[in-house]
Structure formats: C-alpha cells, structure tokens
Length: 439
Ligand code: SDX
Image 1: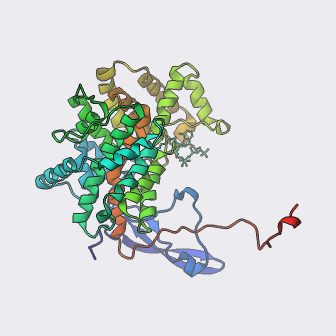
Image 2: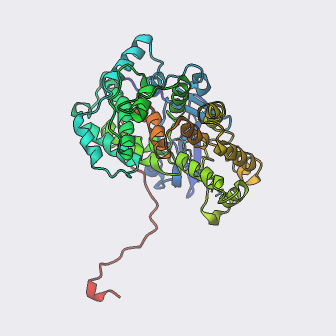
Image 3: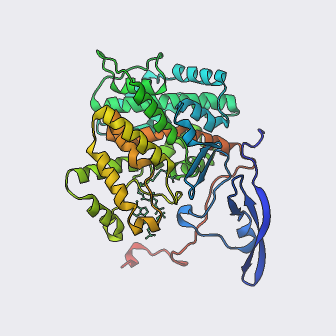
C-alpha cells in the first residue's frame, strides 16, 4: 500500500459532549494551517445521535493536502504555493502536475508530461461519430460529460489505477483529450469541420487552434491570450471541497473509475450556482446592458428573497473577505479586454454592480464578494470564447483538481464509500392500501 498522500492532522484536547445526562469525549484534530475539527466518526456508535448539516457548511468530509483556503484572509494556495505567484510565469500544465502529484515538476517531468499531452491530443475517430449524435443546440457541458465517459470505453486499461505511473497516463489522456472534446463540441455546435490538434502547439494555443482555425486559415494565438487563458485555467484548477470536487470524491469513493468520477464532476459544475455562474453573470450583465433593468434595480432584486434573483458572481461562503481569484481576473480583464476587443460596456456594468454591492449592508453583512465567476466571463468573451463554452473552460481548468482529489482519496488508508446519514421526518408505519380502497 502506498504511503498516505495526506498527512494526519494533529490531535488536541478532546471536546466534551453532554447528552441525555451522559458525558462523551470527542477527539479534536488540527490541520497544518490551524483549522480545527471535532472528529465525529464514532458519534453514532457512542451516542446513537448523528449530526445534521444540510449543505455541509460546517462539516469536513476529509483531510486533504492539496489546496488551502483562508476565507477570512482571502488566501488560496495550491500545495502551499499562493496563487498570486503563478501570475508571472503561468503554465497550466505545471500547476496541473503540482495539484496531482504534490510537487512542482522537474524540467524532465514537465517536458515528458507535455510530450504525453501532445501525443494523446487526438481522440479515436469512432468518438467523432458520437458528436454527430448530439443536436447542434446540445449544451456543451452535456456533451463534455458524456464524452469523458465515452473516453473511458477506449481506455479499459485505465479503469484501475495501481500507481502514480498509471495515474500519470490517465491524467495526461484526460487533460489532453478534454481540450479536444471541448473544441469539437464547439465545432459541432457551429456546423464546422473538426480541426485536428497541431503537435507543434502548446496546450492553450492548441485548444484555440482546434476551436477557431478554418481549413483555409489557421488561428494564431496572441501571446497575451495564451498568458490570460493559462491564468484562467490555473485560477480554476482547484478550490478544495467545492460541490463538483466533493462529487468527484463521492463518486470515486464507490470505486468508480477516474473518467466516470470526473464526468460526474462536470455535471455538478454545470449548475448555475456553481461553475455555471460564469454564464449567468454574462446573461445578467447583458440584461442590464440591454436596458431591461438598471444595476441598482438588479441589486435591489438580489436582496429581495421573494425575487428568487441572486447577484450572480457573488458568494460563496468560503470567502468572508474577498476571492483572490476575482481580484486577479479583474486586473487581467481591465488590461486585456480593451486591447483585444475594445472597451466592453459589460466591464463598466460589472464595476458598477461591484461598487453598489460592496457599499450595501446586505452584501457587506453577509460578506458576499465577487467570486471567480464574476470577471471570468468578461475575460473569456474578450478572448472570443462563446458564452456557452464558459463553463466548459471552467471544467478544463478544474480537471487537475478533480484528478488530484480522486487520487488522494483512493490512496487514503481504510478508504470507505461515502454514505451520509439523514434525519427521517416522513410517515410512521403505514399499511399498503389496495386500489379499490383508496379515496
Ligand atoms: C463557484 O464552493 C466553491 O468553492 C465554488 C467555487 C469554486 O471555485 O469551486 O468558488 C466556484 O461556484 C463560485 C460561486 C458561483 N455561484 C454564483 O456566483 C451564484 C450566486 N451565488 C450564490 O447563489 C451563493 O453565493 C452560492 C450558491 C455561491 C452560495 O450559496 P449559499 O451557500 O446559500 O451562500 P450562503 O450560505 O453563504 O448565503 C448566506 C446568505 C443567504 O441569505 P440569508 O439566508 O443569510 O438571508 O447570503 C445570501 C443567501 O441568500 N446570498 C446571496 C448571494 N449569495 C448568498 N444573496 C444574493 N446574491 C447572492 N449571490
């Protein structure tokens, strides 16, 4: 059995629980950055009680050594490295290696992994026919999830991963081919011919080549765009136990293979409250731009619980100060969008919304700040990525995080299938009623 990838937390003085006149001692643990948790693994066996925490806002599902978030300080670190340090020399592929294997790649590892990504960029010709089975209007996230699962049918040798060597092969195929699948989903939606990956191009330029080149004119990726897209993928690469990553761990805990687990992660990410928010933000900004509603009116609606409207791109709860990713993406958008596509009125509307919300007690008291989705859509739009592909780009960025978490969990000693409990509030014992006796 491999050494656990995740160091054990430190044990502190146990907590005491008084319940029904009994005292129970519950272990307390502390992580490497001082996060503390009460270990309730024996709670039901000892007390007959479970905890209740819908949305798991107060519940740790695991220990992990991949990403650290300090929501109060606006800190986000990948394997201890602050994300701000990836701005100047961003290569998404070295961050992917860092998240999956736990260290920055050596030069040899980096070049060898890059060569694997180039070698594995093509998809089986049989998979192309599957694209034809989707209507052109099919949501690209539906295609992405389906085709990641389809990919596993061409790689049965990667359903069981025994060591990091096999993990590396599976990771390289997934990270490389998700790019081709994404590009082909886009081409299919536009009725355009598929463009083969170009082995002379690096990760991002190859994606944009497959998306935007035409048989008679090759797309050439500007250096500014290459840097911005690398940073966008890096900033989306992991975010500890968010909804989609928890889904990947949950599905993987049943022994499901890496492809099936990541396909499930795509589905979780698709939701407008999660990765789908970058599309919802653009729709919100365009709705305001069309003049249907003013920024002030939109913020007022977002505060009104009955409106069912939320200020998309604001929240979630993990950041009670600011999301460092939003700040970094805003800076890149301010610099890049005017150069790429001229002044974008949506950027001005986004700034106005942020200004109004951050001076409104409703948002300040709830510590709701712009998140990674608030500016990413404006930046992707400036690069020329169509709105319906925004969440697909998010999934491409988040894939290394999913892979790292899936592998970390698979290597945990005594790993158990995830199976939460519930508090039942339905009918008591009830007899079956034959049809003729029903009202
Ligand atoms: C991502 O988990 C992650 O790490 C996610 C992510 C990642 O990298 O994986 O960071 C990526 O998914 C970012 C979030 C993208 N979603 C959106 O931008 C959609 C808009 N945001 C919200 O729907 C909301 O903030 C969520 C879904 C993100 C979080 O919802 P919660 O769990 O209900 O938020 P909460 O418990 O912190 O809410 C506290 C209060 C509630 O009001 P009260 O009951 O206290 O009166 O704040 C309100 C919420 O109604 N609230 C909002 C709001 N977000 C929370 N009110 C208006 N607009 C919002 N955006």
